[in-house]
Structures are given as structure tokens and as C-alpha cells.
Image 1: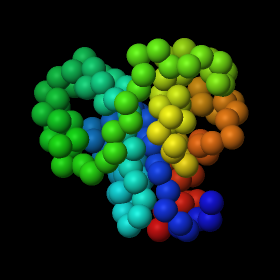
Image 2: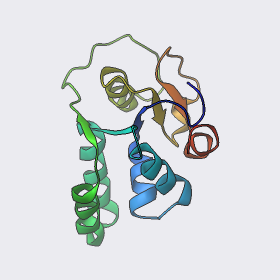
Image 3: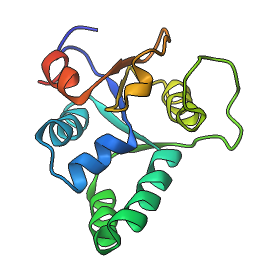
Length: 141
């Protein structure tokens, strides 16, 4: 897929979403803006949305309204994460990360953006797995 080229389906991980919402990280905000621009489609899985809500409620309870407002105003396609994802598609150290990448595969994402190092050693044919900074240098328009 060419940098800044044809339309892409871009799924983000919980850490990218929270980096944008809570910390206003420029790369994470940039990924979300670019993924929703033009013909691109931003994807969020139900697993990621649920995890983000749980983390914010636990770590920053005063910010739950900020997350909800952000999700309300954000344009994205929801990918439903199955309760029992098909096992064995790939190997990953943390079993709690399996449904995240599984959702990206099920949602036909071209790119999966994450800051989680556990995805560094995962091999899948698609989607491409990149960090927010890699996304911004390779794909952002």
C-alpha cells in the first residue's frame, strides 16, 4: 500500500485511543485524524472501546465523560469482537492482546496502529502492524 495512497482501513489499539484522548499525544491524534480523512476508514473494535472505558474508569475516573464525548463525536466503524475469537491465527505473548489483533483481521483492517510492544514479534499477512509514529511517517497525508 503506497504512503498516502489509496483508501485504507485503519484500526487503532486502546493505547493509541487513550494517548489521544487523555494525553493529547500528537502522533496518536494525528493517526486518528488521518484515519478518518478522505476515503480512509477509522476502525474501533468493541473490545478496544470496552477496554478504554475500563482503564479510564480505573485510572482517571474524572475523565470518563471526556472519553465518552470523544467517542460520541468521533466518526468510526465499529468492529464487533467475538466473545470467543477463533484461536491459532497467530502467536502473541499476552493472551489479552489476541482479541485486539483478531478484531483487526476480522474487520479487514489494512493497518493496525499500536504502541504495545507485545505486537512487535507478531507475524500476520494483514494488517500491517505499526506504531503511531511509523503510521505518521509511512501513511499520513
